Length: 418
DNA sequence: TCTGGGGTCCTAGGACCC
DNA sequence: TCTGGGGTCCTAGGACCC
Image (cartoon, rainbow, N blue to C red; front, side, top):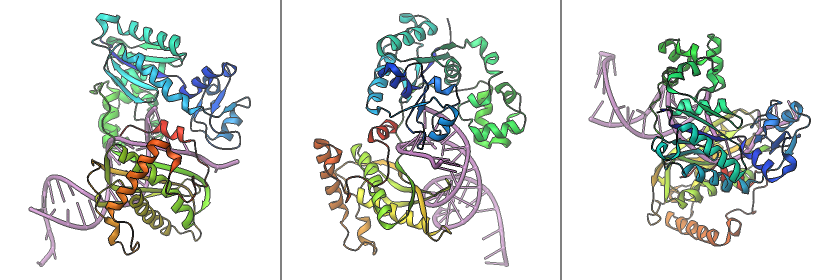
């Protein structure tokens, strides 16, 4: 019997494939979801566009230059989550051991399913056909003995393919592949390895572990060395609890005025704190990131005496940290291109436990609402929103920040479960 | 022509404690 | 007189993933 019972299933160019599914005129054409020829970033590219070198995360103007016939489509973000969920349901039909790692990919362990559905290769073929027939989307699958191998196999299988790595063929399979296919090797690690003449996984495996650790650092080096030797102890498991929650807004290029910073941070803190409260969690460490024109960015963090999940408190702490970061910059008139807020050190926090009134002692905010009052306000806002929608009530003087922002639906897609 | 949004993990120095 | 060893927490930065 085959030991290649770990499957990695990965929808091909997911957002772009959905757009082509929903609008037949887009099929067979190079399309980009998001961005435009004048600005923004491409969120996803169809395989026809990838052939020109267009990839997700690329500035729209550069994508348009690479592919003059590129068609920019605004994403229909509402459609993505339900379609991806239906795909996951299909995967769940062959085994309960499904580990979803993002909206569009998952690991499966089909060791217990072979007596019902056949070999892993037959199961993968069945899944691919069902996803294609019932949902209309192309999906690639890799099957192997370990997660690492299965993930690499699905990448090799793309687009719309299946690759099975039998246990006796693992070393030969890995040998010629580029190190960049390994999970954890990005552009920096790839460049460092290339400087030493290491470009394939086989070459990496023949490099002593101590040397790899020198090149990539102790932890990363040790892990990559082990993976190159085909040692991967990870099991297929359910998702663990989130360790942090954050939100960010790109601002283009704006002068950092009191009003702008306050407005953007209120919005971000409201998102973060709202998600925390929705899951009865709170966190002690508040981190902000400020990005300046030119992509240079700094972070400032503060660990509070107790956990917070209150919009107003989070806004105030974030504001202090952002101004601290800006003041430390040499520029006389600061401009910012992005603000981010995140909370870590998460703990369970039942809605009955009231946050300590941290800010009431703060001389900078005399008379600010005590913790209990803040909780009450937030709970009321949450309740109104639950019934009437997010736009029904808010802290902001204006309903939305006056900065260009991605659709709410897109933010939702990127959120991880808390 | 100027780059989205949401996450995880690692490193390294310093504070602080025993 | 000026020094050991180990551990944890905090902060800032950075690589990487989807």
